Amino acid sequence: MKPLSLAIVAVLATVALADELPPTLTKSLDGWKPSTLAHCWELEDGVLTVTSDESRKGSTLWTEKEYDDFIIELEFKSVSGTVDSGVFLRQENDQIQIGISGSLKRDMTASPYIGGKGYPVEATGVADVLKADGWNAMKVVAVGNDYDVWLNGKHVCHYESDTAVERGPVGLQLHPGNEMVVQFRNVRLAELQ
Image (tube, rainbow, N blue to C red):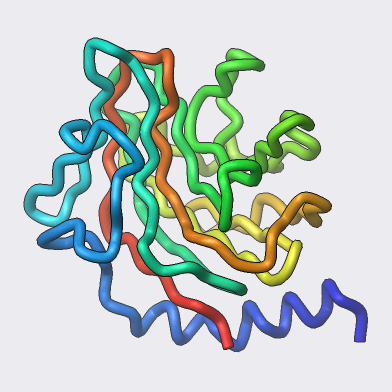
């Protein structure tokens, strides 16, 4: 069986698992740790609000646990400013973008950003499903070096990374240099077996 076929089988076999997982980040940041600027990450009533401070320095909220193959589901909302955020996949080098790309100056939501390569592929059909002023559901499945992304239920991107690492934490990003507020809720994360 081809690697892509194996990845698809793994994804389909674990969708039910993700649906059964309770959301994390509902009452506390237990299991997650900000790299810096802890005051920029505020959790209230199950909504994680990420606000840049006057320094506009960046920060990442990392899982304390490291993951091999995994699935993460979350909802995000761009509240104000120029939102440039994302989900880091086992390291800072590989990321799925949320919001405006600082380098391209346009929305690259659901596209992989790879350090040193920029955006090797662009997610397709995002404009048809992205809600500019509302909550958006994103699912990312990382199996080996294959990344698949869904936005509001639509599969929008597949990327095979040549910079993926086998194991590492998952992170939510507050990009440096911007004045912004982004929110997350219903974050679900599971290692795939």
